[in-house]
Length: 418
Figure (cartoon, rainbow, N blue to C red):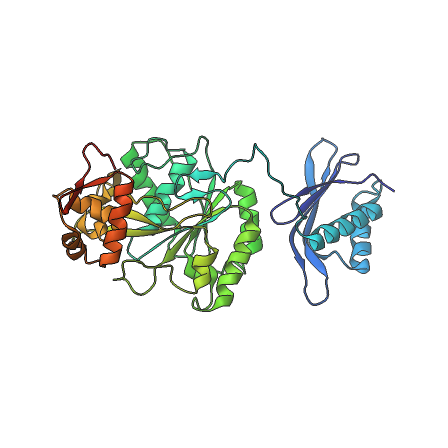
């Protein structure tokens, strides 16, 4: 019996190495069939040649790891390639190892409290949390794809002094852009305009155009993640990536189940609910799209007709389990299509009336009181909110020493910075 191989887990399968013989067998697309328990997939065999180089001696082939007949056929085929290698033993070890790993799934972990446990990590604070499904949703015309292109470069460069006020990572994070909506030329053009606006060197994007739902294309996408060493995938966008009727439960569950298989961080672009006039909107489709997401932001755009300038604001709609809602983020994008330049600058969302209406009651009251002292009723009427909401919010602001009451009117507390 030959020595046992070393086995390395991959996103899409496993790699078996027999160093004594210079043999490596890679398996992909592993699938445990629900009907009969068969384990199938794809494999190819590499071996060290006379020059010490690793070359493929058995090309990628679909394979049934549960069949005695296919095991015998594979061993005989490989024996022709090199009669000095104990192929029968290796194939048995391969097939038993693949079946054992595939059927076991993830092992049970014993979790315990510890003083050195760290909180979940932000790859891009506060928008992208490591290993989480992060979502940015908005109107079809809210520049979600443009935003995703910008965030890709903030992660990959990393862009420390970005004008959006995002805390970039301390290292380059590789990103794979999975695109169901636009095309490579559009993403390339937007990236080029960004590069010119930054006055930077050549920027790169690992890009893949997709046509099938994520669940149907999962194995190919796993392979592309492995090839690009991506830690983050951009899903552009949720509707086509999920497939099916978005109001139904099954496409939502299937999408997030497939997404979990990728074992990487994701930023998902999604459309908003049809009620576009509502102050609190949500991801379009089944409630599970919101329930399964762990960090959800809404993007809104304000742009005048025929203007090349747009104000972009991100509102935090669902915080992660370990944190509260983050304050809104704003910035301005200016396009010059003739010169092919995109410039980005900081912007205060509180200065745009359309955005102020979308903010929380606390922020709206503070902004209103900047203009002068007001009574409870005057605040209620100005903001069109209930009396109970007004009174409760004013009490919280007073307790935080952000406002003060003089007579029957409320005003901003002196020297407060909020």
